Image 1 (cartoon, rainbow, N blue to C red):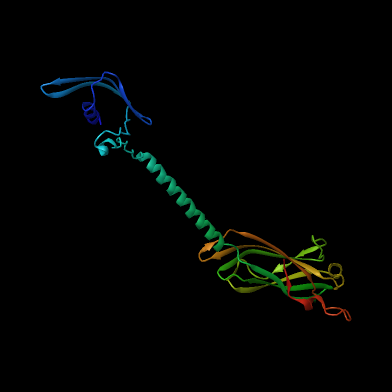
Image 2: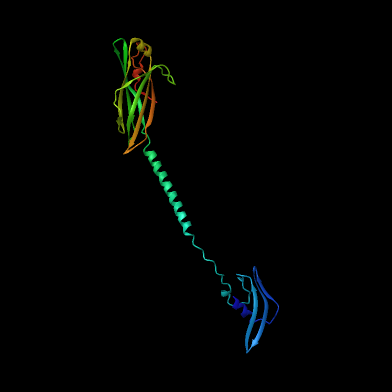
Amino acid sequence: MRHLLLRHLMNCACTTRPISYKQGRDQVLITRVVLVRAHGSRLIDETMRLRPYLFRSCPRDLQSQQRCHAKPPTRARMAPPAALQNAKRYTLAALAATLAVAAVVTVASVVLRPARVTFSVARTGFRRTPGGGLLLNLTLAADNRSRHAAVAYRSMFVDVGNSTTAPPRGSWVRATVAAPMPLRQPGRSAVAVAATVDLVGAALAAAFTGNMTASLAVMLTAQAKFRVGVAWTRLYDIKVSCGPVSFFPAPPGAGAGGAARLPVYCV
């Protein structure tokens, strides 16, 4: 660029006035120009003050426009530090690990969810005992409708009450469960659990059953784990109530008794 400017001045008239070219923001200022002829050649001694990185636009009479319009060198982009690249890699790896853990937890929660087990009172009956007492018999049915999950009951308690109101009131008697614990139940199967309530003495039997006319309530409390494949869930508490349940035949003229409406599903 500087060579082109000198070449332009050699074709110009001699002058000692400052010459400036201004094209937009680009400006070149020549503060002193001395033209000396020596031995048929031209020698130019100049002192110039130039604005740095300017003169991007050329005067019209300059030659070699391509060289004149050459862009100034640009700074090369520095590569990001290795520490920054490592930090980005660690961040992406942490995000990927978090997503993977969330996916595993979601799948596990869906697969290992508790099986849907439906309880009901399937059969009821009674038997008189010596001394005027009553022995109440009932059979609970547990229906595991899950295709994959098996159930293992750790404990099971059955109580029979003489009140069918909610919340349950009145008197409650603990029944004796005949099934041994733990009780295992595979998927898509039903198990029957027999239980008995012994009402000793005529007075207790008459008061508790309303002289064998009242409908009773049954409450089931259990603890169970569920297994999917080889994985076991935590221990779950199960509590359902069933009623009204009739253990006695309907009196004459009263229509069908409660026992005729079995099974009674628990909620």
